[in-house]
Each structure stands twice: as structure tokens, then as C-alpha cells.
Image (cartoon, rainbow, N blue to C red):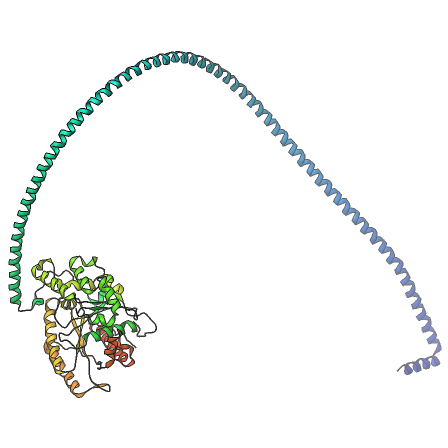
Length: 555
């Protein structure tokens, strides 16, 4: 490409050299003009720069002048403020001088007044000095008079001392006379008191004799009345009911009585193991979590079988020494108001089942029952002993401590047994599935119906439990099943309504005897645990059905 350009320039020079020269001259002129312009613009730029430097110097001078002027203005303002301050201080000084003059005049007036007061005080001092002189003269005269009086008093004291000695001798003689007189009077008073005591004793013995005759007559009448009852003492009509029945819905704590007037049907074993099952399972049916039922188990049989089953011998001996058995509870309830009796004082917590509490019984229970019965027969107006247990168990505090109360009744109509009927909400009747036991159930239900009509109208039979059955797998043997099936009509005739039968039956197992010997509950064995778990579920369902509510489940 450069070669082509050079070739083109050379070609132009050969063809038109004048034009090329003219172009060169023109180009040189342009170059010279540009050089002259550049030189002129450089001188002008230096001139402009000098002018700019001068302007900046002038601006700095102006700024300095403005700063000096501002400083002068500030200094002037400071001087003016100082002048104003000095003027105010001058005014203040003048005011102070005027005030000082006023105070000086006031001080002069007060000084004049003090001088006048000092003159008055001097006059008073002179008058007081004169009065002091007069009083000192009077005091001197009084002291002289006092000396004369002291001398007279000392003479009188000596005279009185002599008279005192004479009086003392007279008092001694008089005291001896009085001592002899008092001795004579005391002998006379003692003799009179002995006579009065003998007379009162005689009158009291006569009155006691009359009272004893009246009591004997009353006892004869009571005995005659008892003979008319033909042994049915507990079927007396209620005269005074000191403890009204509180419904279980209002009271919350349900009371179950295990009763059968025939012995040997396993009431105690059923009551103890059902109570332990309820206490271990709890409200939600789970023994491992949730709130457990609080169960109170009461032994009402003087043989103490339930007590021996649940408690160790050492614990029984301790409760016996502390008088914490049910006989002492009934005796205290008969002697004072029920609200003053603390049920918890007689309860013993089971060591293995913390939510199970036990009130035990001992042999003296039979004596206490007889004493209470005789007192009721002799003095029926003092209160009906059939309601002692109701007054205790229907108190508001029981529901705060227990959810269930289970009563183990004796196989006879004792004082404790009828108290259980009067207090209970439901009766559970254990039955051995044989003909002898079936006949006993009918008699028991007829007796219960009579007592229900007389003094426990709210009592209900929750159901019959087949106990001590000979199992064939999960079924009764044929003979026992036939006996079990003939119960409903017999119970309907005796109770005048249908009586439920629990589907769960308790098998005859050697583990029950082993557990009783070892003071533990048989439900520790899995098979027995399953039986009582099912029985507890049915009991709760029966209670809920009677009370018209949804059953509580036990897993």
C-alpha cells in the first residue's frame, strides 16, 4: 500500500510540477500560521494565568478582611455584653447598698429596744434579789421550827414504840385464844361435814337404787321387746336418722359392700384383690401412667381375715397398740359428733400399693358391737347406731381422699354389717356355684330387701360374682354352669327384681392361699390379674349403668 502511494505521488510530480509546488507553498504557509497562532496563544495563556493568580490573591485578601470584620463585630458584641453586665452589677450593688442602709436602720432600732429591755431586766433582778433576801430569812425560820418538830416527833416515836411492845404482847395472847377457838370450830365443821356427806351419800344411794330399779324395769321391757322381735333386732323402725344418705353422684366416692350371710364364699379374697386392682389400674385403665383410683378397704369382721391378708404381723401389732382398728373408730363415732372424728387417723397405707388404704379389725370388735347394740336397745332415744358408718363415710372430706370405699362384711348380721348396709351404695354378693350357696343367696337377698325397706332405701345389688369355680378352660364345668343358670329366677323372687350376674367368674386357684400366707395380693400372678381386671371393668360398668352414665374403661 505505501508503495502504491509513493508511486501515485511520483506520477503526479511528473505530470504537474507547478501544482505540486503551489500545494507545497500553501502547506508551508499554513504551518507558519499555525506556529504563529500557537506562540500568541501561549503568551495569552500566561497572561490569563497571572490575572487568575491576582484574582485569587484579591479573593484571599477579601476573605481575610471579612474574617477580621467578623472578629471585630464579635469583639464589639462581647464588649457590649460586658457593658450590660457591668450596668446590671452596678444596679445590684446600688440595691444592696439600699438594703444595707435599711438593715442598719433596723439594727439601730432593735439596739435601742434591747437597751430598754436590759434596763427592765436589771430592775427585775434588783427586785428578785430583795425577794431572795426575804425568802432566805423565812427559810431560816422554817428550819428552826423543823428542828423543834423533829425533837417532838422523836419523843412521840419512843412513846409509840413502848405502846407497840405492849400491843404485841396483847396480840400474842389474843392469837393463842383465837387458835384454840379455830381448832374447836374446825373440829365442829369436820363433824358437820362428815354428817352432811353421810346424809348426801345416803340420799344418793337411795336415788341410785331407784334409778337401778328403773333401769332394770327398762331392761326387762327391752328384753320383752327383743323377745317380741324374735331375734330380728335390726328390723326396728328408724326413729331418729342422724346421718342422711348422700347420693353417690353428689358424694363422688362410691361405697361397695361385699356381703353374703353364708361363710366360706371368698368375700374377703374378692374384696381385697378387687380393691388392689382398682388402686393399681387407675382412672385411665393404665397401671403405668395417669391418676390412680384412691381406694379405702375396711374390714368389718372381728376375725380380721382381711387385715391379716393385707398387712404384715408387725404392722397389725403396731395398729393394735395404737388403737387404730375399726372397733375404736365405731366407738369414737358413737361417743362424739361424726364431724369431730378423723377417719384418716384409723387408716393404714398399704406398703406395696400406695393408693390403697386399709382400716383393720381385731377380736375386740365383737365386744364393741355388743356394747353398742345393748346401749341402743336400752336407750334408743340417744341415737340409732345403724348409721354410725354412714355419718363417717358420707362426710364431705371422704370424697377428697378416696374414690372407692370397699367394705368386707362378716357372714352374720352384726352391728358392723348393718352399718355397712346403711352406708353402702351397692352390694356385691359372692357366690360359690353349688346348690347350698345358691339357696343362701336367696335368703341373703330377702334379708337385704327387708333392711333396704327399713333404713337403707338407696341400697342396690350391683351383681353376683361366681367364686371358687372349678374351671374347664375359660368355662365352668357343667354342674356349676347349671347351678349358675338357676340363680336368676330365685334372685328375682327374693329381691323382687332382676339381679345382674357378672360374666367374669373367679377360678379356684392355689395361688390365693399362697398369697394369703405371704401377706400379698394374688393379682400378682398374671392369670389371676386377668380375672380381676375383667371383674373390675364389669364393676365399673355396672356402677355407670346404675347411675345412667358412660362406663369407665379399664384396659
